[in-house]
Image 1 (cartoon, rainbow, N blue to C red):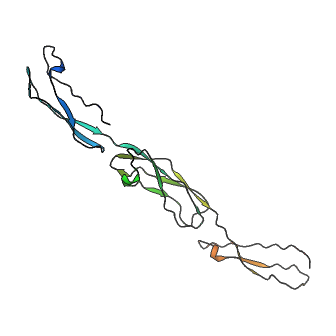
Image 2: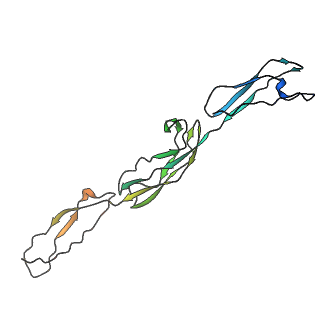
Length: 193
């Protein structure tokens, strides 16, 4: 909504009130952020005065729009996700479709990153015609443990020989990522024969 447009009349003499000059004010059309010419109009000759009508400027400033990184989670070894941003501050029913250049979003995660939490940062360098994009709170990428299972047992049937005998197991290598190697420790409980 525009403010009430008004003008100041200069050059009146003998205590004449501003009401001795009659004029109207309009401005160039447009609602986007930017500068708009304000134009006063009226008769050039009014009573004891010759009137000139210089223009003014109405400036519509950009609204502030906060860009916040969304929290995400992956499992160890997963590909880098597509990071997303939530915005707060849109007006007039607008949404992210009015952003011409999204802000940069970064995170130090890679598929070889260890289990833990990684900061997802948003810079305030995005562009939108009607908004100043401000970096909000960073998000968090949580890397969860990957589940692996026993892939193969061997030496599970033995013949009594008076010595301790232990079966062996291997981890299913299809479950491993990043060239990881996991050892398996097997314990045996005597359940009798």
